[in-house]
Image 1 (cartoon, rainbow, N blue to C red):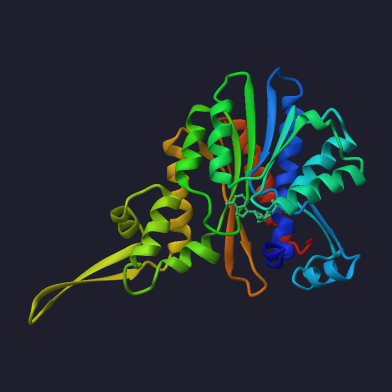
Image 2 (cartoon, protein in one colour):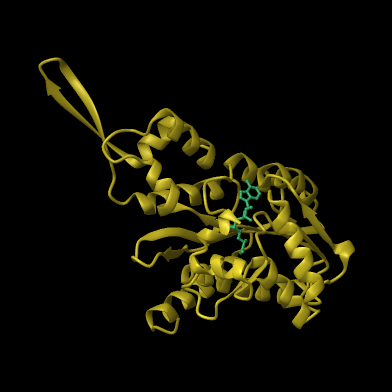
Length: 303
Ligand SMILES: C[S@@+](CC[C@H](N)C(=O)[O-])C[C@H]1O[C@@H](n2cnc3c(N)ncnc32)[C@H](O)[C@@H]1O
């Protein structure tokens, strides 16, 4: 249950609200088309948590920001869309999680709540997402199939090499970037990151160490008694540089990218950014509209 201790309340809700709205719009458009649509949740998670049992109460201690004290995760929300309106269904669903208990929990909830669309349409993959997605993207490399990929790792477990596989598909992607909570922490303030951090950053962004340093650090040269010395200082706008670099990488494989939904913690610090990527301009416009609306409603204090 370790990961669920990190569920963070309002920002999680905002992310899922945006995803759900977009999926509804996507399926409304796609039902008129002849494509086979495949929903892939790369970090499927627990499905649903209710404040019912003593064990779950303990879990809720950490997600107590949620107003109704019931947590409905991405898988639950996506399945519920088609339960409420069967016309808004994907042709197939693929749920990936490296924790078998969570996949079993999804099956249990599906049976209990009648979310059981058709077993033959749902695949449960107990694997690391990078491995599973690499294999799936090879299958999505087919003009009659449209993938819809939702990736919301809370850390930096998603490698760029995996996403590069999107290049030959026409999939839509929603990805959660752990900008403030993980990436920015590896970017040490007044020196370039140590080797282990640089390795993580290069595999996450799919760029070499030189590009990491150039993107995130201002280089200063000073003349000293011992000659010229170089020093490095992290730029103060590194969070937006993180999003820019990730967006640039998505552009490099032919994707258009939405504006990001910035997600902040209780102390108002940016922790994640959630954004959409698609080959289709209309899809990006829809994503932008949904994100803008979410931001406006938040400013108006509606949530
Ligand atoms: C962020 S939560 C998923 C949230 C979920 N999508 C939701 O909306 O409720 C993280 C989940 O990803 C799983 N996970 C973490 N690293 C993974 C990896 N490398 N591959 C596959 N699953 C992973 C964890 O077991 C956990 O269930």
